[in-house]
Length: 189
Image (cartoon, rainbow, N blue to C red; front, top):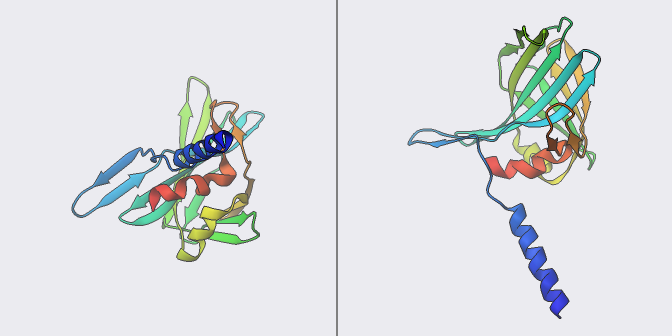
């Protein structure tokens, strides 16, 4: 009986830990607007030769509308071509339950910005875009892991395999990309 009570207490603590409060970068509410923004989380890292590519997810709720922000960061000693998102761009997610989920681009047109880091002698490109969920796909994302993600940029499509655990070599962070929505969607509802 004592073991059972200990197990029950441990289970209760783990359930409460999973429902911990969400941490926001921005949380503002006025009479006419409300905005909640979660910190960006690394979901993909590719280091090959002189080139590093990082992809971050961030969730936000803008006046009751949950959205996904993606940020692509590329660094290279070589030239980096421009990436753009348009109104017809999409993020397509394949879930472990076999379902395919599509997120729709909220931007009319946005392209990556080029910067130069003189100290490290790197070209840097940053692209930030926003995507809408649909009511039909929102619930599926809360209940199933992601196995594959496809981003339809303007003029090209890129596929990303999302890992169950990503330990960043350069950023020294750990994340769980395949369960990102299961972990954080509750924070922007």
